[in-house]
Amino acid sequence: MAMSNEEILFPSDARSRSGADFRRPKPRGPIIDQDGREIRPETLGEQFQRFRFDFGHSSANPFGDLTREQRLARLEALAKLLDIAFILPGTKIRYGIDGIIRLIPVIGDLFATAFALWLVREARALGAPWHVTARMLGNVAVDGVVGMVPVAGDAFDVLFRANMRNVRLLRRWMDKQPR
Image (cartoon, rainbow, N blue to C red):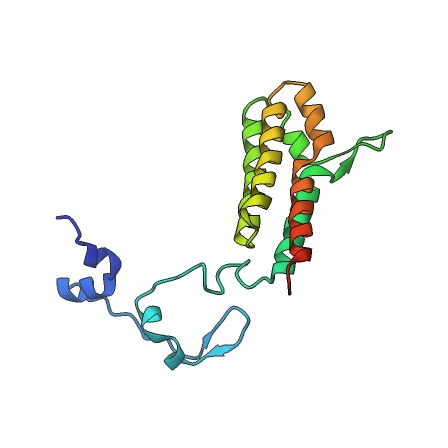
């Protein structure tokens, strides 16, 4: 017998209708959030009773309550890790995880491009206009296409630093915005 949508979405209601009532002890004591503060039961509402989570607007999302500056600082840290985290011994040439990942022939190029596209997506989520995101996508495209060339593409990727360029573009745009 297949389960109906109601039985899948609301298992407690389905159990009571099916006759399989499992006796669970009622929780005792205060309800505590992840920061250790007590939550009054009357503030929880109907959504809590039906076991629904909205990860985009709850405290379960670790990046949900960050300010724009904090989000930009996180993007800058990621761009530095991807592009300039390490120094080639004996030289002043900086490279990052992006340059190392791209050494794996096709899969590495795809993963590195995916990381760069995620930075563009985060910029769009910060409210960057179309002309800024278009330039960022252009940097990612140049980096991705030239990076596909076996050895010269890897050297180009280390020197071009598309992620750092994109974060710099985003930072310049954000500095012009009213606070």
